[in-house]
Image (cartoon, rainbow, N blue to C red; front, side, top):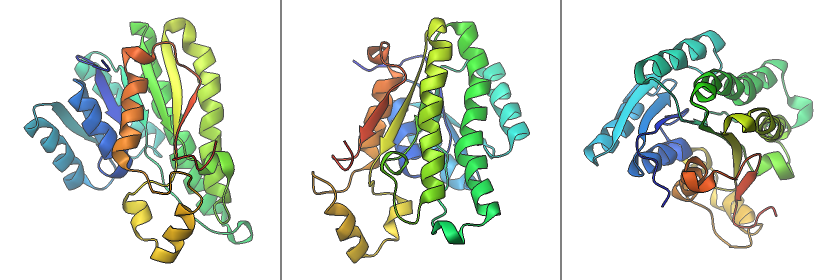
Length: 248
């Protein structure tokens, strides 16, 4: 169950955190995984080499999803090399926190360029291959913040909420081609991004979670594997929440 042997999967932002966990989990289930990275080539290579050492198949691809031309060229090249692209996990994203009154235009633009336009560019290019194959899986990595909001994260919340709208619309557009489009909305997950929080702040967040603990990247990756698998063939346009009950 949940095997995806022979599938080609691209995970953007796959060199660390949730992206890394998704890349490793997809490879464990038989996919050939392309690990995208922005600046951390060494980290991306470490992930790919670890996958290969464990008996899987992986390679790396360095490009900035915020750079439309570079992204289009990179994904087109990957499709040409492998003959197809079956699974896209649009995970690459950035967070810039701050109150609305202090939000700068360039910060808002950076968030949109990476979190929204970058994800849509990846999906647009990947869709060309998926339409030809009349099959495919697109998985957007949103956030619980995109659903419930949070003080000091207005701009970030807007970008993650935008992915939920994109999920529902693109799912309707390409369902006739047997392409499913879904989103994952992780809650408070232990990653490099959350590691910098002090214990007091972490404790306040945990109090908001009914399961009374933080989540792991592997738990998010499990949701990713399900949505990428044949078992999820009748699931599209949905948001799968992995948040411990933080938002229901």
